[in-house]
Length: 290
View (cartoon, rainbow, N blue to C red):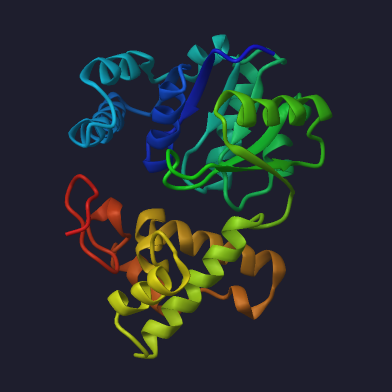
């Protein structure tokens, strides 16, 4: 299979990162959102990301224009029928994702790989809404997409060998990241481990053991983390962390996956992190920490 044009569904933080990374690698991207307003916002955030790189002399003005020219904004899934692969990256809502996959199955030729960036949900269940479950696979990128050279490749029960091998080739040869094969399990490897760490950091905070700043500094300086667990949670979105913990608690039934009360309180207060401007720390409209 020749990968040239990739569809990306969802213009949130992960969708923006994936679309930008693909365009930097020379691929044409069709970015899909529900409304023109959401599309324009996603596109402007990608442009802002490139502007920050421009300020640091990481890219030139000409490179910025070239990267942006490779990203087309579309609002209808039917327009993805010309893509070589589609990556779904909407919020972690099983019913919403199933609806997207059912529609993709209807509009995309049967040879197109349909990948999900889900971090916790069942690929087998997503694939069950399609007539060709063999082409459905998980491709879990990690935030920040441009800096983390790892992709979890998740096989559902019916994912075909050809779909897996082509996806692995896409990850390792086309976008040049390390692909790790994971068999389907709630949270896979990275989400399962990191969300338990974040949840434990919340217990430490709730017990008054240390301030948010000191909790994060302890892990950043002591264990060479790029971000501390609380700032990481702010970037993921506290609602996403809660959804992941609740999903794993439901599936495994183990008390270690029970979400912290503080996490639930913050989500109820709509303090979700970067996306709302406040979580454990405060952020400006560009997502930079204040």
